[in-house]
Every structure is written in C-alpha cells, then in structure tokens.
Figure (tube, one colour):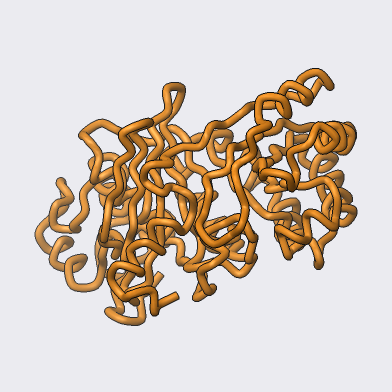
Length: 359
C-alpha cells in the first residue's frame, strides 16, 4: 500500500473502508472516500488534484501523501494485425512489468502481470527466462489497468481482466485477492466476477487457498496451464510438475469442482513434437472426463532461445478433441508482430537499453 521509496499511500490499492478510515483520520467526512474513488474509477483521473467535487482542504490533504498509482509507460508496441497493444511499465524501484490491451471482437480484455519475473521457469515462456524479483502490490496490479485505460481513446474500457501476464498469480495470493475485490466492487472498476480469469500453472497450495476464500472468489474463473497429459512431458516443460504432479493437481481440481460447482478452464499450448499428436488429444479428452471444464487450445507464440516451435497440427488436434466431445476453443496467437508473449517486450527493451546485462 505504501511505497518505501516515496512513502506515498496509493489510492488504487485501497478498499473503500480503508480510504474511509484515512478520510476520518484526516478530519474529513466518510462520504468523501466514495467521491475520491469515483474520480479514479469513473472519471479516470490520474492526479488527486484533478478529482472534482472535493474541497480545497481535502485536496491539500491528499496531494502530499496520496497518489493514484506509480506506474509509468516505458514502451508501447501496437499490433497492426489484431490491434493489441503491449505495454511495458516501470515501477518505483525501476523494475519492469508488462500488460496487454486486447480489443477482441466479442470483448475487450486487459492481461495483467502479478510478479516481477516468474519463479515457475516454464520452458516455453519468456517470463520464465526472467529471474524472479518480487510480488507486485495491489496498487501495482490495479495500476496496470488504470494506466492502460488512461492511455486509450476516451470511453474505451475493459470488459474482461485476465491474470495471465508475468508471474504466478497464486503465489501472490493475498495481493491478488485484494485486487480482485477492487475490480469487482461497484465503487471500483465494477467488473463482473465471471469476467475475471486467474491463470495458474497448477500451484496446488494456491488452489486450496482459493477454495478456502469462498465467496470472495465466487464466480471468478480459474484457468489451469496444463500443456501436457503425462508427468514426464509436463515436467520437461513445466518444472512445477515435479512438485505437484498431475495426480496431485487432479485431486485438488476435483475438490475445487465439488466445493465451488464451477467449471475449470484448461489452457493447452501446442508445441511441435512435444504435445501435439492425436494421441495427446485423446489422452487429454480422457483426463477431462471427471472434471467440468472448457479447453483453450492455443497457438504457440514462439520465444527465442527455448528450442520450442509452433505446432503445424493445430486444426487436426482441435478437430480430434471435438470429435471426442470436448468443449474446445482454438485461440490463434495474438500480437505476434509486437512480441506479445509474456516477457518478450521486457527482454527486448533490456537488450536494447542495457545490452542484455540485466535480468
């Protein structure tokens, strides 16, 4: 909530009741908190002195101690193909994170990062090549969304939020949970829970925390990055599988399904000669029989240095799943011309700016 570098309190990291307490402590009426948050989330102000309907003495109270967020845009990469925009943000400690604006035909989505770097080390992911530095605070996650909305044409707003950027969201569970509260709240961004998706590599303790959170995460969508149906293959491309094998993951997902009554979305990136054979599709269909699900089969956005390639078998793989009765969507790669895979823009910027010496 408070940045150690400048000791500011970040409004984008506060719940309504927390800001109400700040107002009362400063000698102001409780209702002023709602006015401040309306300025941020309804009117899109980026500086506290721009908030309308506030008395002068309240603005003077806010200005030295409070800030909306502290992210600055380092680079933007615009896709000519699908109109995606990849953002690279600098944080107050000079670390860099990415987020993506994806204005699809059916809905407009922002993809948010949850950590600086990622400790999961998935072999196909550019974020896995970035040394893990730290968790993002709530105001840094909400700030990604606010900074993108402020940068778009007036009236453009996201209909969906996906936590699929840099990092493993469930390792940063408490900050993630608070962020989702702000996203859902009528005084916040007012995004419906069903339009919020959290993607995990299968971090079992985090899924168990999700179950324990109960109503706080009710209707929020859980997405599992699966990518393989055999432990040997999955461990090769996703080291987390050595700690939480497919059998452990499946036992946890059965518990999740039973206690929440929710579908699980499975993400399956097709990698040439790794997980893209028809036998893999058949094994996937068999695995999913006992869990209510949907499946997104995804074209691989190739990352240099991984030794992994995009599969040419996507259409056949998806057709086989559909023949076997699996509810599947085939997602074509977005933003290939702007290196929109997680971590790619950050890596390119660091190579250009620091000669690749920084990780």
